[in-house]
Image (cartoon, rainbow, N blue to C red; front, side, top):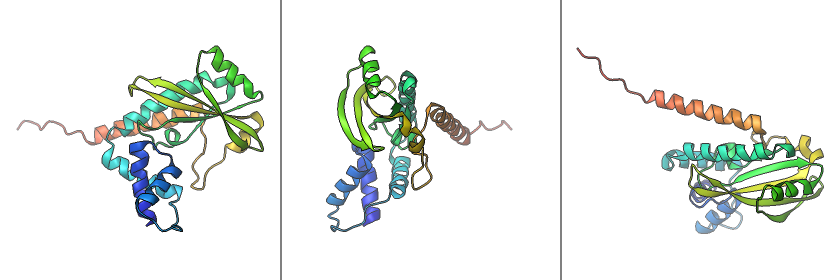
Amino acid sequence: MTLAIAAQAARLSVEDGLGWRDACQRAAHALNAPPHTPMPSRALMDEQLRAHMALFCPEQGAELAALRALALRWMQRLAAFRPHITGAVWSGLATRHAEIWLHTFCDDPKALEIFLVNEGERYTLHSAGDVDGAPAHWLDMESWCTELGKRVGVHVLVRARAALGGALGRDADAEAALGNERQLRERMACAQTATKGQEWGTFTPFPLEP
C-alpha cells in the first residue's frame, strides 16, 4: 500500500503541483488506505517522481531548466542576503507546476522587505514559526517566467545570519538540503551536459553510399 500511495502521490505532485506531504495525504485518502498505513519516505517519493516523469513528462528537462534559470536570477538579485535554494527546483524534480523556494540569511530581517519595496516587488508576509530557535517568516511573491509563459511562485524564508552554518546540512539520503548560486550553476551545467549527451546518443548517421 505504501508503494501505491507513493505512485499516486507522484502523479498528484507532477500534475497538480502538490507538495510531498499534501500529495501523500491526498493519495492515501483516494486509495482508502488504513489509518496506520506508513507514508512513503522521501527517497521512495523521489524514486516514484523520477519514474513518473520519465514516462509522462518529456518536457520536464526544459521546464526544470527554465525554473532554475528564474531561480538563479532571483538569487543574483538577492545576493546581499546570502540566498540558498531548496525544494524541487534544487533537487531536479520540478515540472512547470513547481514553485521556487529560497532561504536567505541576514542580520536584519526587515532589510529584505525594504529591498523588495525599493525594487517595486509586491509580496505577502506570513509567519514560518520558530526556525533555528527564533521567529522567522516567509515572503511570498510571483515572478513571470518567459520560457514557461506563466507566473511562478517565489517563496523566500528570512532566517538569521547566524543560522547559515547549521542550515547547510544534508538530508537522510545525503542530498544537500540547500544550495548556493555556484552550486545551482553547477547542477544546471551538469543537466545541460547530460541533455547533450542524450542527443548524441540518439543520433543516427546517414548510411554511407555503396
